[in-house]
Image (spheres, helix red, strand yellow):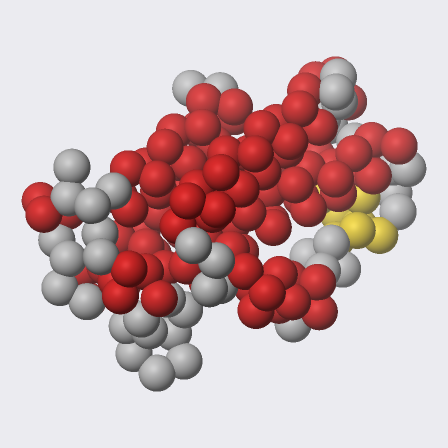
Amino acid sequence: MTVEDRIGRAVDLLLARLEGLPSQALYREPSPGEWPVMSTLAHVVEMLPYWAGQCQLIARQPGNTFGRTHDDPGRLGAIAEHAHDPLDVVRTSLRSSATDALTTLEAIPRDQWHLTGQHVRRGPMSIEQVVDEFMVRHIEDHVVQVNAVLSTLGYSPSQVP
């Protein structure tokens, strides 16, 4: 399965999991300090184009520093700003975000995906590694996280199409 397919599949899984849920399931913390589903979705909307842009940066300027840490103001600000958006807005934003990220990645020739930059914490990483770790596996992890949150709140996957 291609990177594009995996990202598209993960977005589809997130959106399918949200169908038929009452709004309280989307905005309620599963436990104090844990992200509600909508905070996770707001994060995914922000992070996909962010990391695609970082890949573009590596392709343009190999060897330069890229990335951010968990306490980055842009990351946290996007979550705070959009964690209470209505589901229809987030649904549209998520699809648009994935499309924008994939368009950015498709503009980077595959023969450049071996180029590396210096991640702020992890050191040297190739574009291929960034895509796999910070985009593909990251969104797949958030699918698992959303399912776990909904399960904790009492919404089993069998209750939702």
